[in-house]
Length: 195
Ligand code: UP5
Ligand code: MG
Image (cartoon, rainbow, N blue to C red; front, side, top):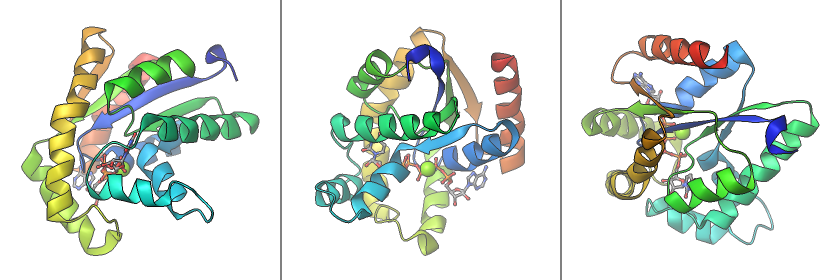
């Protein structure tokens, strides 16, 4: 695929802000392909024969950003696979979360159309993650990892949001309200931009 053949929306926001939840609703209504960078990394970690399994698990447990080469390759492959099946519209969730990734993706793969940014107070995200941790089985849904994820988000990922804000590409959504209230804002934002 070439950049003019696909369209990508980045979905950003802190850990537990509700990115995955809102993406699932957009998929149902608009037929986007939802690509969560975290999900792709977890799948690669568990793939038999992967040479990156141990490394990915370490970065995720420590709330650190996996070296961009790995994540970029996973995303590029996933876009290609879906493009081959005729899919052209993608929600890239939880990526880019470091400046090098933002620049590489837009230069090497495709520039994003716009960014949905889920803005959520930390105490709300903490409560959601601890609650999800009771059943999620995720190695990073515990208080130690969550604190590290929050720190990485503030120090490393917020500069990416700022970078896109300066380009007037960010739509900020408040997400400390019920899922359907948040989705109303999301839907309005998407309808305005894609038509
Ligand atoms: N919930 C959701 N919305 C709600 C609402 N409005 N009201 C009440 N409850 C709500 O939601 C989290 C929980 O909250 C769920 O239980 C949900 O029901 C409830 P979810 O939709 O899962 O939130 P999300 O923002 O997707 O949270 P997630 O934990 O997935 O965010 P992270 O960004 O932390 O996780 P991700 O999987 O993207 O990344 C994990 C790790 O992978 C990173 O920390 C990093 O180590 C690594 N990574 C990289 O290295 N590079 C990358 O490019 C991407 C990830
Ligand atoms: Mg998620």
